[in-house]
Length: 257
Image 1 (spheres, rainbow, N blue to C red):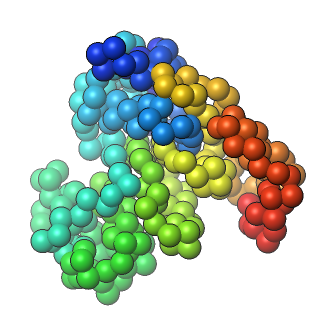
Image 2 (cartoon, one colour):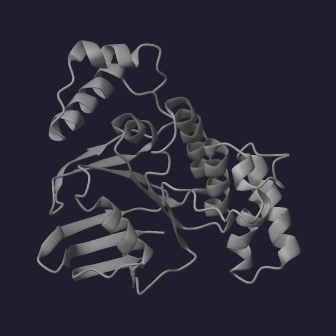
């Protein structure tokens, strides 16, 4: 699904959060939104999800105005938001049951999706009985089970340890390759953005404007490490973080990019 932001602005009273944001995101693209905390990145996701209305401009999904939430547009938060009184399978199946899918059919699909995220045999566990990474895997399964055409990810792995985060990034990339939704990913992790994204938008402080856009090769292609390192340094520089060239080289040692 093509997603179009047409001259979007957003303000809360006298607080201007987003100013004159215009971009088109093509079907199947993963676009990472990187910028300072509080600059308006998450607000853009909420507008795309139909949870908030822009103060000015229009948001279009395949040319049609976004008037409110829709199952074709799924928003996933940093917190997994699983219901503690439901098992993992019941939590995942609920996404279909809310769309009036038969409970038995929804449960069968939930089992299939939990297997895809490596949670086979954990279907009947409750959220408190599994790790944070496993809960986030279940949240991924719930996000994908309804086959959204637009997936809006608000720092989905930000609260996880580094090793779990990298493992889930791999899982997310595999799921996206299979399902091909249009994805907007808010992240503060520049390496995560470089690893996952087809495009990266770097935002200024509030009110959010795009400082620079980076276009990356598709993930099937091998990135040139020197180009990757230069891009990483440039993004960090735009964010006011100045990494030494040697530090970047160390981070890239043995990395698969």
